[in-house]
Image (cartoon, rainbow, N blue to C red):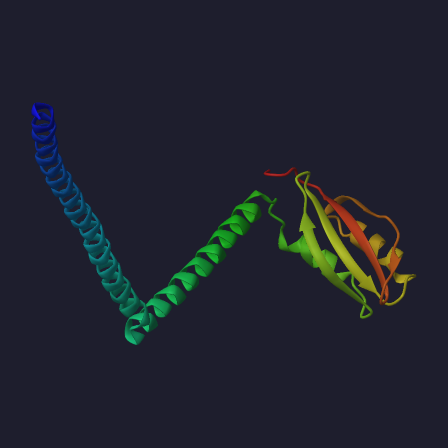
Length: 189
């Protein structure tokens, strides 16, 4: 009996401990659950706030873009910027052309007149250019190939050029020839 009493006493003690352990385990589980709910609830609230903030910023930006007066003004400013860039490019091209022209030799009016005066009614100058050596290049179009040598000779006899040469002609809607006239003066003189 003593043994049975001891067994019952030990059983009751175990029962009390297991109740305390069960209560404390349940309390721990409940605390962990509450903590998890708080943490996940906090994350959810944070993401909801961020989503609302971003949605508000999107609406604000969208209102700036879609506001018709602001959009028109923006388009007008883009047009002005494009016009400014086009004018700037033209200005740069004009500056480059002026610089190139300033490097060319000065050609007195008489030399240019000699080149023009030697033309017949069936001939026309279609291009003029200079090179660094002081050569004056003339592209001539003629309806009659036989008139080209006469024209070259007339320019040679004008007295403005040291040498006048050409490489023949090409047949293309008439006859084209390129004539090289070497000026009598040095480049830059």
